[in-house]
Amino acid sequence: MVTLLLSLVLPLGALAQEQGDWLFRMGIMNFEPSVDSSPVETPTSGLLSGSGIGIDGDAQFGLNLTYMLTNSLALEGTLSAPFEHELAISGLDRYGLTTTALGESKQISPTLSALYYFGAPSDRFRPYLGAGLSYTHFFDDSLSTQARSELGASGLEFDEHIGMSVRAGFDWRLGNGWFLNTSVWRMNIDTNASFNSEFGPISTYVEMDPWVYSLTLGHEFSW
Image (cartoon, rainbow, N blue to C red; front, side, top):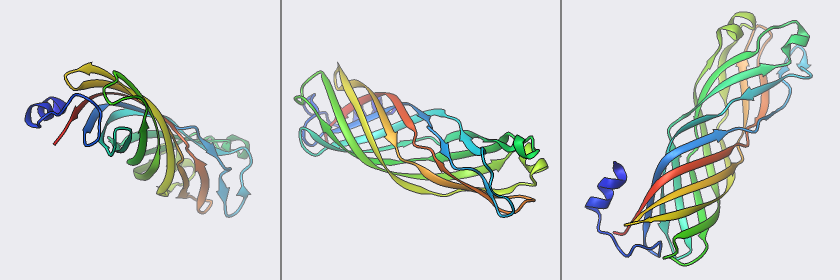
């Protein structure tokens, strides 16, 4: 609906991805963490060998806006609805604990990327490569009933992070300024997870480093 309105109210230039054009896309983004967690650490027992944090994936609505600086170079901003993640904690059974469900968290990772498009502006198929920076902000962190009951857990927090991202994708032109896009990101997201417990403050370093896949519908327009 948004892209349809844009096509009606904004004057269209030549139907080509060329210098000065804007490309608007919206669709589905799938965020899949590749989690590598350090062992959970407590002040009384130190590092708990074999323990760690797990974070599952999520799919949400996303959109981005691209400005063609030249016929090949572009600047793009990407944003999605908040991704919601189930959190798990593993390896506590060897210490006589049964907790496996840690809680939930939401996060957004707006990203600014520089893109290089291959081919000519009028090509129907235009692949591109890009790199950029993302800012990850966690919020609405909550602990499971199991963690609060057995561990006396409270105050779950994740640190914010600014990291690099690389990506590849392509646009497939449908006609009349419309096109389909598919792309894949590899993002660097590292954070420190911490919460209070009856054993004292507990923390662990988590490398999320997700793969992000998107399938979107786009429209190109000029001012």
